[in-house]
Length: 68
Image (tube, rainbow, N blue to C red; front, side):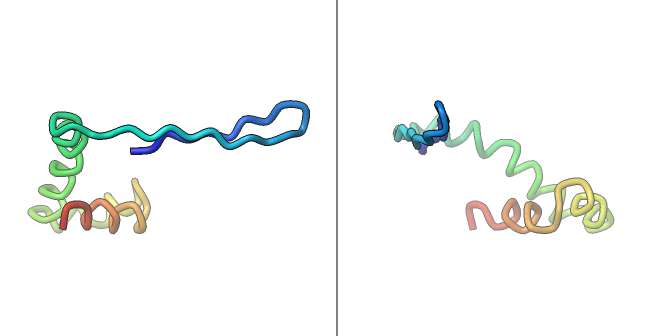
């Protein structure tokens, strides 16, 4: 996982990045809301339009593809 930011001081931009390893617990915790979203999307096709309107079609596509 990478944390990154761009800092601008006196008109000079500097990119700062920091990598760190994910442990299994961190991965599982981050997948909980994604798994819930995927479950709702799979089992409630009547909510597809509302989810795409709320999150945008590209976010819905990425969320449904995570882990596949």
